[in-house]
Length: 305
Length: 115
Image (cartoon, rainbow over all chains, first blue to last red; front, side, top):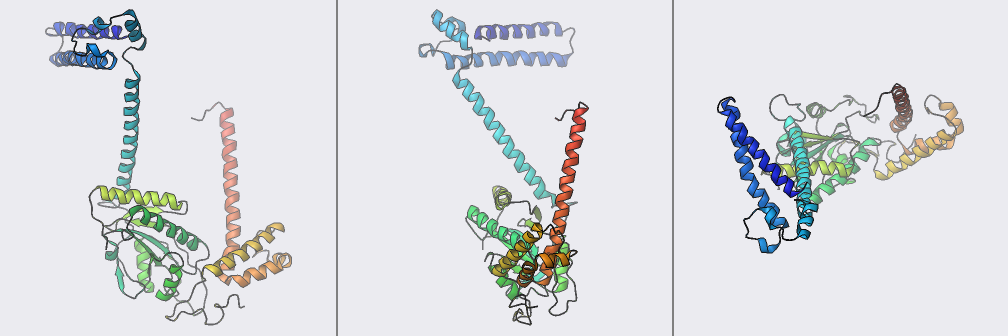
């Protein structure tokens, strides 16, 4: 559409609005009248400004201060033709349009993803939360008491397993080691993220055994063990299926069935997300970093000692 | 049975009463034995090393011995069972996929368009 046509269209629109207004005092209800007035004032307020924009974009510099009508300033037929061929559109306007559009799309996607994560993270807070995790008492590898309180203040990454596990746990622990390295690299501070391995098999997995076992995967993984009842309790807290036989004869060999998820817990020690077999170290790191960054962006503290 | 040096007798006992688990090297050795054994079963069209134990031992005697020497008895049993389980699982997935494809064909023939 040419700018000429557009100008006349705008004029017609506003005239139409005026005509509506003139009838309205008798026939149209007051609310519609107000709308019509708003429309008119809007159209009139917009018109000079948009024309001015078009002028700035299209006009030659010598017309910079001119206030005369747009159409009057086409000096030659060439100029007029040129203007008619492109109308109010120029590459600058097109670029602005595309950039704004792209910016909005990106912004909305990022915001949508953030809100979705927020919803997931907040699902385990407040009323009706699916409770995963909770208070527990275990022992760390130096024999000191370790409770759920010790997990607070930083993001923790909890995995349940046992050292005599044939194939799944070693695979998952190798993955865990990769995730730890990637997350630490991304945060720049290895103290922000606390990976924890809780054994489901306390009879065989004593601190010494656990220490040697975990050392093979990553020195940063904290191993936790305890009595049979403590382990049973912590498994229940985390909704981990627990099938360790209670009375094992010395030397008897057995396997332990257990859930094979990593649990990402936030600094309040509330459950945030599961990382499963289907996740790669990259996808898991991405999920974890998104949560850590959300937490930081909200200005909430993270323990660093 | 003497499947691993640490597994016979009390040599796998940790000083604090725990039982030392296979380390990375012995795990790798066990998995290698398992893969060789399973490859042999594949060659001889045997699926279940427990149910068809006699046939498996006759055809893959050397492999099964090495497998059992490299892994603990529970692991051997676990891997043999897992092989059957995974086979059945893959078969089921395949069957469902095939059924889905047939259903799609049928629906398309009836003029239904996938969106």
